[in-house]
Length: 433
Image 1: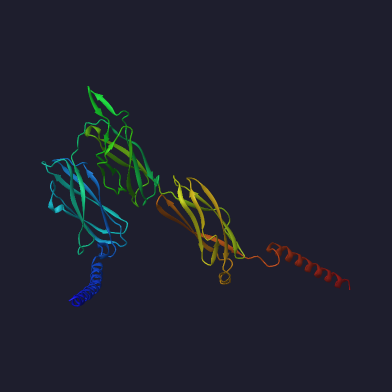
Image 2 (image 1 turned 180 degrees about the vertical axis):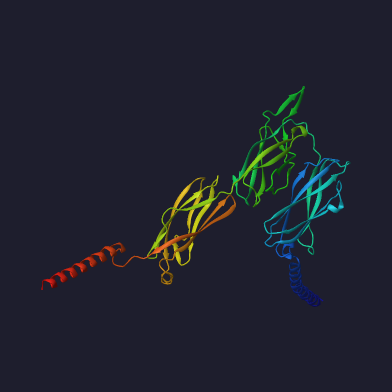
């Protein structure tokens, strides 16, 4: 019996081993199939990928029994263009559309790195309760492509608190300090509770001086300036004298005009009486790196030393400034001149040694100028820029071997005069005979 039991146990172990061995490849096969079908939406549409943000809610927070305007921004963060972008809003109670015909809005073609915005008008039910409610926004990159959905929170109504602390804008910082058209960066605001004591007595009643930031939203007030982030909400309590920093990602359009643009920072505090709006300027300037030739561009016997002045004409510091020369048949040393950071109105003088290729010299006329191009690469904050200056002509010349070419003319004149003297002497000598 013991032997029979052992045989059956061994058979059971063998059977379990066979089952395990058959399950492993089956599981691996299923994982492979799932990985093939689990293709992200961006890959299914040829690399286009949409990022959706509610950049403005007006009014914020939404008011019960009134209309609400949502500004929805869509950005193509993929590598390929989206052929036909649609945005659809799917409202839920207590929100309703002003018209079902306005549920879907078409953006059209959206190239990589480009953004577009559309406005939707919603009504907040008169029986809605204060608080946070969600709303769904759907997008798709083409008529035959699937919808992609994202949910957003919308704040309704303003809570009222008895605290008497007041939130004020202490300072703001933009990075970069001055934007160039097409730049991205940040605007960071510091909010401070201006109260100086833990409590305050008003009309014989004591109140705490905590301040609440129920909401903070940054809105552009001019064209060409885009806020990439949704509003902040429920940032909590600030005690007397406490501060908090809020950072908003912003973008300047490629066609944004130069000058000073403005944001409006709207802050919702303890109650309606403690709400505030502040103006925040943003400067846009397209001035950049200038390259100026500081000496004659001349190459002698295939060699030259070229010199340039590099000037930062922008109102703020550039970083990682480098200059690279290029010309057909010519090598430059160094191949690229790295300057590094440059302050406003700062000027550097740089030199390159240029050496022409021997075969290039033999194949050209010595009087034919060499077309040189200079590229200036630099950063403004996180943004990389390039300026290119072309049609800088180097004039090649050739010196005579064994002496300066300046000595050739006087030498020839001496030989000519000597020859003429000999002829005169010979003629006079023959006449005496």
